[in-house]
Amino acid sequence: MGMAMRFVVYGVLGWAVEIIWTGLGSLLRRDPRLTGRTYLWMFPVYGGGGLLFERLYAVIHEQPWGVRGLVWTAAIFAVEYVSGAVIRRLAGRSPWDYSGAALSVGGLIRLDYAPLWFGLGLLFERVYLFLLRG
Image (cartoon, rainbow, N blue to C red; front, side):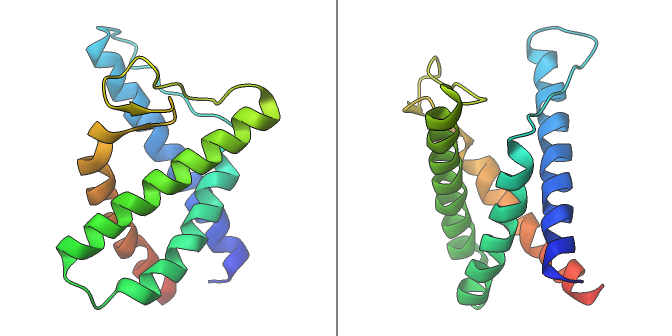
């Protein structure tokens, strides 16, 4: 599968995961509609981030899974923070605002999401290897 198609796959998968995550978050607000949402801004962030993470995987793939998970966590935080800051600069605000969260950094990342990013990064490896076979 070519790079352009992988970009699209990562963009769509990112959107899908975000919609599911925000929909499940509706449960915390006791919203039975389970409304999920994403932003058009996120498609190139997810697509480009996926391609960037492919390069990172080539460097870390021989490391133990715990080390790789920590690297993924840091990488996802970095992409989330930088992309949020860039979008904030371009649009006047970021699509997400974590300012009210206790472990927020600049309103752009939440440190309490670290376990999720750890797992998601390891899942990304499986998706990438699947795409390489296809």
